[in-house]
Every structure is written in C-alpha cells, then in structure tokens.
Image (cartoon, rainbow, N blue to C red; front, side, top):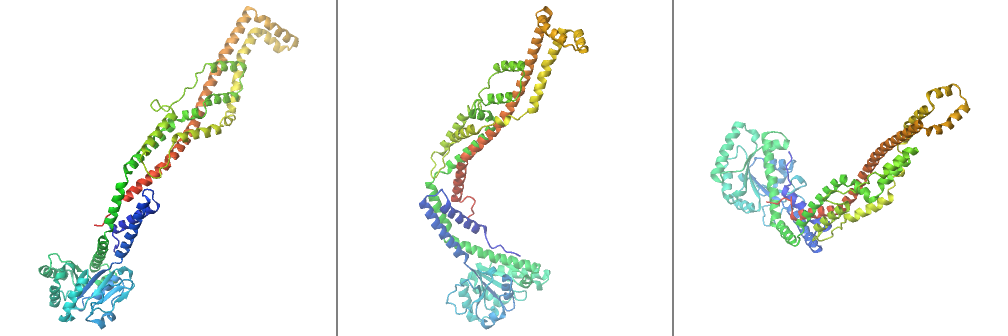
Length: 553
C-alpha cells in the first residue's frame, strides 16, 4: 500500500517559487530592481524548502518486553531494520534508527543514547525512530532519563499487546510522562492473536482505562505488524497502514510548520503587494484583451462583406477587364457583335461597394479599428508592440495590385462553350436567310435548279435578285429579314451578356473571397503580437498575484 508523502500546499509553494523566478528571469512585467528582489526571495525560499525538507520527525516507541516494537519498525521500513544485535548490548539505552544522511540532532547531553543504528532506506529517510528501553526492565532510577528525553520527541507511541495492555509498570510510567500526553499515541500490536470478539473486549477495556487516565479520545491503533510486514491483506495489516499514514502525515505537518516558521509566504506576499501597488496595468490589460477579442470577431465577420470592396481597392477596372477577356475569347458574327456593342453601351456600371452603411468603406472601417485598439494601448508601459492595421491594408493592396494577373488564367476557360456559341449564331441567323431566298426565288425555280444545274441560269437569277429587292414584295421580304436578324442578334447578345455577367460575378466572388481571407489573415497577424504580448503580461500578473496557488494552513 502506497502512502502519500507530498502535500498539495507544499507542491503549490514550490510551483509559486518557480513561477516567480520565471518572472524575474524571463518576464516582461517587472522592472530590473523588482526582478532582483524577486529572484533573491525565490533563492531564499528554495533554501527554506530544502532545510524544511530535511527536517526529521522524531518518534519514540515505549513498550514492554515482547510487544513487537522491532516488528513495527521493520514494517514501517518495509524491510528488516531492527535486529536483536542492535539492542542486546544496550538494554538500558535508547537505540536511535536513522538514515545515514540525516543527523539525529540530540546532542551530547544524553549519556543513555546508544550509537545510532544507521540505514539507507529512503522510505523512512526523514523519520527518526527511537526504540526506548522496555519499561518492564527499566529501573526506576532511569525514569527521569526517559522524562528528560521525551521533550526531544514529536510523538511518543506506547506499544502494547493483548496480554500487556493492563501492565501496571506501563501505567505508572504513563503517569510520570503525563505532561507529554498530547503527543501520546497507542498501538495494540498482535491483534492477529485475538478473535474479533476478544478484540472488541480488549479494545473496550483499554479505551476506558485511557479515558479515565488521560483523554476522552485516545488515538489507538489495533494492528498486526507481522501481517503488514508479510504483505497480508488483513484487518490487522490495513490498520497498520492507517498507522503508517498517520506517521507520515505528522512528518508532513512538521515540514510545513518549519516552512511557516521561516515566514517565507509572508515575505512573498509583502513583496508582491508592494510591487502590485506600483503596477497599474492589470485593468488596462484586461480591457485590451477584451478589445482584441472583439476586433478579431469583427474581422472574421468582415470576410464575407468585404470581398467585393477588396477587389475594387486592388483593381477598380477589374470587372470591365474580365468582360473584355471573356468576350475576346468568343467569335461574334457581325450582327451579334453590333447588338452586343449597343447593349454594352446601355449596361449600368457597377456600384461602389461598402462594408455597410454604418461602417463606411473598408479603409475607413480598418482605420476605425486602428483608433479603437490604439486608444486602448495608451497608458500601457513596457515593451508594448506597435500596431497599424491601416498600414497592413495598404501593403496588402500594393502587393496584390502588382501581382494580380488573373486575366491570362481565364483565356483557356470555356473553349467548348465558345465553339457552341459560334454554331448557334450561324444556325439562328442562317435559317431566316434560307427562308428569304426560298421566298425570293420561289419553290418552283429552286426545284428546277436542283434538277438542272445550269450555271448560266443560276448566275442570271442571282443578278436579278437585287432588282426584285426594289419591287414591293422583295422590299417587304428584305425588311422582314433585317428585322428578324436584328431581333435574333439582340437575343443572342443579351443571352451572352447575361452568361458573361454571371461568369464575371462568379469569378469575382471566388477571387474576392480568397483576397478577403488573405487580407483578414494579414490583419489578424498584425495584431497577433499584441494579443500574445497582452496574454503574456496578463499571465504574469496572475502569477505575481498567486492566482491558483494554494497556501499552507
């Protein structure tokens, strides 16, 4: 079973020191003088943590012969530490079990201390276990020795067993040490030798005896160190782990008390409060972050509404150029070309687009955003990034005005549509001409020409055709032909212009959306440095104030 040995408050203090040290070495918020002060305090804090981390918990085990103190020590260490060879030569002395890197710190005033029994077990590195002489073999002249030594201990653990919990010698020694009773804890070892019914009886009597002599709420652990050392999953083993958790908890609390005694948190708070009084950027940074978020939202929504105006800013004649390129790729018969020129002359010109009535033109809107952001920046100190969305817009327009070469890309589009349009012109305009000739020559003459291909006859009829045009029937037929051809030409030209208008708008929309997206990326990139700077400064403020860092209670 794993025992947690690291309290959250201690971890948070370490994190806070690391964060403050980061502000002092890499941050932009603090002045040079404040960085030196914070760095020095962080160094002092780390030294305090190291010193407190080495502070051991000193516990004393008092018990009679055969109650299992050694088995408790070994179970705490999770391996054999206490052996008979440590104690046999020193039956009337205190055997101190400590890690070889930790100094017990008892001094030379106690002649009854045996040489330390050192070990290398990191699990109990900061716990010094003092195995006191068995009280039932302790001569009364040594009682004063035990009383003097208990003032050095953080915990005094009385170890007994089912057969010795009522031993008079133990209760007599307890009364002598009553002044230290606030540090008393009691262990009833060897519970595995009792049935559950007998355990309840023994614990009941033992508790009553302690309540009558010392406290209403004695801390008692009924455990089996032997089962815990063997790794058994038994009630006695689980109770031992509860006892071990209590020991390590006391060790953590002593470490925290050592840190509090050094007043490191109070020094950090005093220094931070003094720095915060001189810094008045907190609310300004929050306002700037909010404004940046609003501007980014506005720019994102601007992509759709600004696409046409972006193209107008880059090339004001783009629509006419697109029309010309698309028309030039087509072949017009002269009647349709004439009708097309007339219709183009009367087409309404494209209106100048604006982002919206409220926003005005795109440059005006971008300038308004610039003023809005720069007014928020006023008053901020430090290495504040410069910001100019208007300059970025002008640069984008210059760059794309030089590189915009989409017209050649359109020359290959719709070749099949062009050929179909030529065929349709010949068909639409040719049918009335055929009917005109049928009318002028007559069906009978055409039938004769098809049977007898006489060249002289054909030439004669063709020379007579102009003469017929000046006759009444011929003039009417020719005027009808001209009218029909004009109507067809206007129809073909109108349909073509509608198709071209749709295609131009589609091309403009596609290009405009791409240009608008590119412009928005440029504008967002322009103030991304400001946003990153603001977020970093805001984060440094939070670190300085200790937001989210826990305190030691």
